[in-house]
Image (cartoon, rainbow, N blue to C red):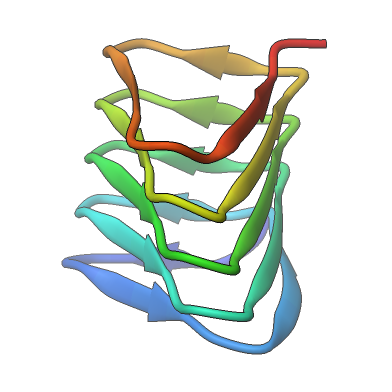
Length: 89
């Protein structure tokens, strides 16, 4: 397992996260994140952002209009879609 982050974080650019985050996460507009680790809070995917979940989101997953999400892992809370594309592959 990778790094541990305490508190909330905003992901920008293109990256893979395989650690543990003990707060909420935001995927910034235009960013791409491949989640292979665990986020123990809520996740918001901003307009134009992309998220692939291969790990675990323990909280809610909110998908803004124009965002793209593919879930191959687990979401422990609700998936709230405000007009994005959600694939529960």
